[in-house]
Length: 244
Image 1: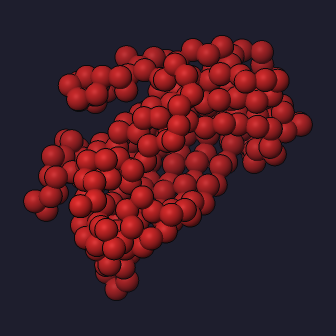
Image 2 (image 1 turned 30 degrees about the vertical axis):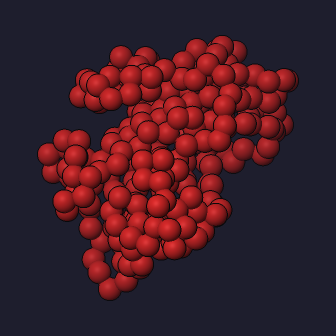
């Protein structure tokens, strides 16, 4: 398949070519790692992304999205307000947009399924410089690794349907979260989650929909148009806690 055809198949999997809103929901856990220490499951994690695909030109797309995700008690799976006496800052990323141009999308054929794999290493100047945020940041460069897999029926390669059912997995390796106040402590976090494309936002678990409705109801819908820059957990934390 050509890069344009592969991207169109990914677009059907990740969103819908007709521009309808598509909700992905995921659940999993967050584990800590640090030299000389055992791995620990610190949090549960549950979130969603609501997306709208806009075709800019033949074979090129804007993916307009908002995403919200919540740190959970690892046993009760209830949304946390505090951790070790510190306020928990949940994920409220608006926007979380992407621009897609044709590229050789990594794809593996798995019998009656295909898997699109996206490996995204990140390294850029941190929104939380260590001298301004000594308790929240250990480095002036933000470094992380995002690993996505989207699983779709093999018919996604031949169908004319705007979208297809899909499941996904997501692994993320990152520094300690700013609100954890780990300072210069070596180590970090690994997020390990799995999820699926829902028939509609109404399929999001009721507890999660209620939390979004009570705090930021716009996250039930995708953006209508392109805006930038994207929000991240680090830029959102800086907005809540501007430097002195």
